[in-house]
Image (cartoon, rainbow, N blue to C red; front, side, top):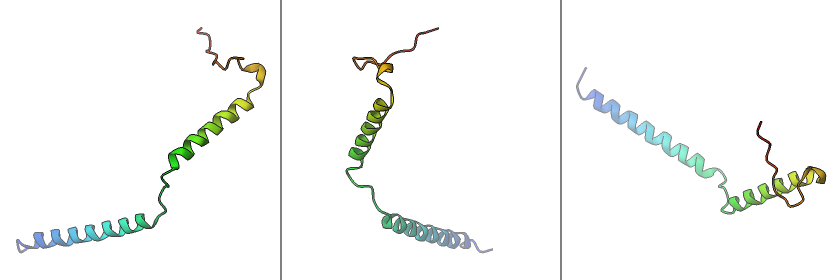
Length: 74
């Protein structure tokens, strides 16, 4: 086998990797991007979850001042 064949095969492999990378980037660019206000949506969502959990717990089970009850150590 000729010594330069390894270099030629390396160039072929590198070119194939570059093509697949370009295709992957093109596919990723075609996907919709996450909007810049997504963290605000997440914060509002978790706030609504916390509110829902407060509304789901009966008033008798909650402390009046809003403090969390800690379980007693055994």
